[in-house]
Length: 158
Image (cartoon, rainbow, N blue to C red; front, side, top):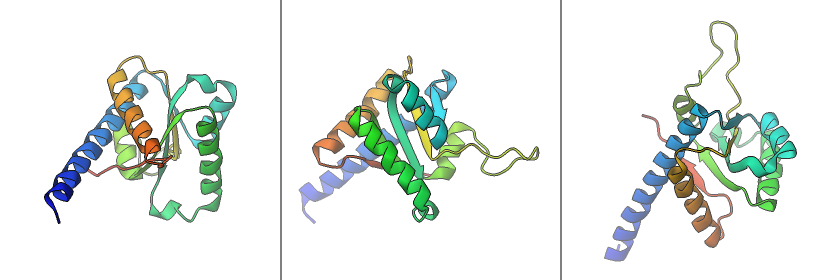
């Protein structure tokens, strides 16, 4: 391995860590401001009614979701819509961490309430933490310049 490869790997790792932290902070801030739409169906409804309010689409899966054909079809349609109207998209793995970040239960609670569907999350016009939105948006834009239209981020357990 050359010095350039070692330095490049470290730089890429740091960049991914920064973007991962920015995404988590953005989601928490947007949730506090009531600027999150959670769920595939709910997200599709919002994009149909008010697509201009959406600034980021987060598509989340884990390995067990990769074989869910219906979910993958939904993702394909959502991605196409987002690309068509220039909404930044990011795919994340680590549903357990995503639930932790958003303070969501991982399974049905004692009141038999089902956890929310975290497979699709839309961020709509958050006022605070715009620097975090810019950071995630820049990462999406850089990825598109490298022909990676839907960049991926692996959320890590704490």
